[in-house]
Amino acid sequence: MTKSKPQAVRFKLYHQLDATYHQLLDELSQTDLTDGEIGKIAQILMLSRQESLKRLVSEPEMAAYYKAYPQDQ
Image 1 (cartoon, rainbow, N blue to C red):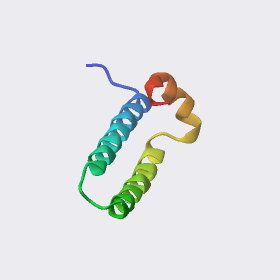
Image 2: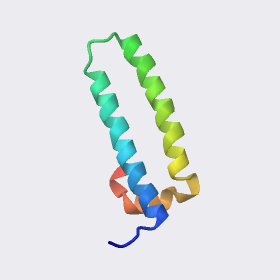
Image 3: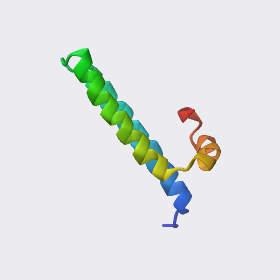
Image 4: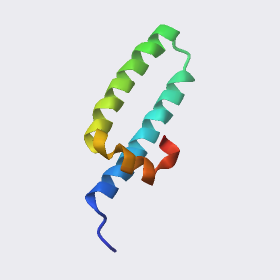
């Protein structure tokens, strides 16, 4: 088994984490909570997403990330 470059691993984790957040938001929208309750929880999730993802892939690396994962653009 070959070692992956740290950047490639971070990019993969970013992609998977982003997909997880999308899934969580989709599930949240299917609940029977009020719009206000959904909005509050969605805001918390989005803040969590923003904080976690920016630490895995920096802004200057985003072009390289989108080259590796063009479907995320």
